[in-house]
Amino acid sequence: MRGPKVPDYIRRLAIYVPGKPIEEVQRELGVSDIVKLASNENPLGPSPLAVAAIEKALPNLHRYPDGSGYALRKVLAARHGVDLDQVILGSGSVEIIEMLARAYLADRDEAVYSQQSFVSYQLAVDQVNGCAVTTPATDARAHDLPAMAKAVSDRTRLVYLANPCNPTGTYFTRQEFDRFLADVDDRTLVVVDQAYHEYVSRTDYPDALDDVRRGCNVMVLRTFSKVYGLAGLRIGYGMASQEVIATVNRVRSPFNTSSLAQVAAIAALEDEEWVRRSRDHNLRELVFVQGELQRRGVRFTPSVTNFVLIEFEGDVKELFVEFQKRGVIIRPVGGPGLVNCARVSLGTRAENERFLAALDKLVPTNAGV
Ligand SMILES: Cc1ncc(COP(=O)(O)O)c(C=O)c1O
Image 1 (cartoon, rainbow, N blue to C red):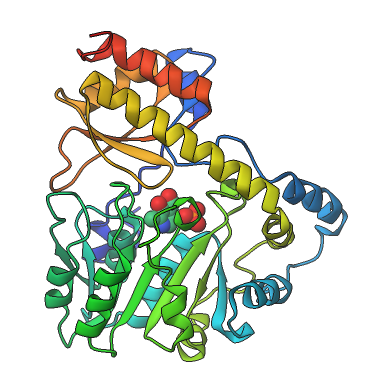
Image 2 (cartoon, protein in one colour):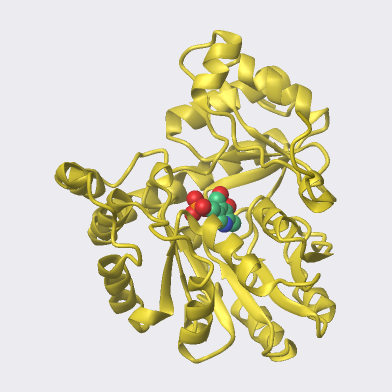
């Protein structure tokens, strides 16, 4: 069977490699008691209020969800001080990243993003045969916003900014962002991906929602996958002008978010106690893990979020396998400037100690010096 011809740009697509699931490592290596620090999940689990809401909604699973997610959008709009038609839901914020590319990139139109940023931007642009224009990160592994502004041309429809950035854990400030917005033509949509926004405690961190509210050509992306602990449900949202949301809605598939995800997200938003606990836990573990890495003389990029980017001396692919044999899943990353780097998510204190114990076995460090 020959099958249909596959377009060249589809043939060239890289397949997304997710963090290794625990079950897969158990199967492959026969190791039990596995610690997964590979996907920046909430180590404390899902919001309990969200779990209760899901249980309550189960008897109605035979019904299709509300396609536009009216009730959840209403709660989000009220909470964030925007109109209902300024909010769109996605099956994870990743789906909105992809919908944006589908909606705005035609005929090799350009999208600008930083080289050491979230891999889904590249996948989204490549999937629609768009033209990716990338800029190197700064020496501190941050977005080089002045260089990004210069890279914007009259063919640029989208700029993807991750703030904080995955996999580097760095952020840009309000002052830097204001300068960037002033430099970028308002025919370009600036997409600010704030998946880790709730973890940031810096006072100069800009919430780009302020810029959406004051009518800038900005879209903010948020997710329930991180601090709310609902990664398995796949639910995220975007906020922008009514015009932008109406455009993106044209490429949204019907019923793109499930009824369980919608009710869980509403409950999770009310679970302020869970968010506070998760955030406090993360801050404590960030201080602990970074302190331990520093004490050992291990090179890492200071993070404001729930993971740390580590630069190893040796081959990270081999180290990844060795960590796995010791029951610890980390996430090797690649690409320009990220050779032998791995991203390690913050877990519970016990999980973080397992990681550090494996590190001491595998990597010569100053531990104990
Ligand atoms: C920067 C960034 N944006 C978006 C996402 C996607 O999150 P989700 O699709 O689960 O909402 C992630 C997930 O790791 C991320 O790191």
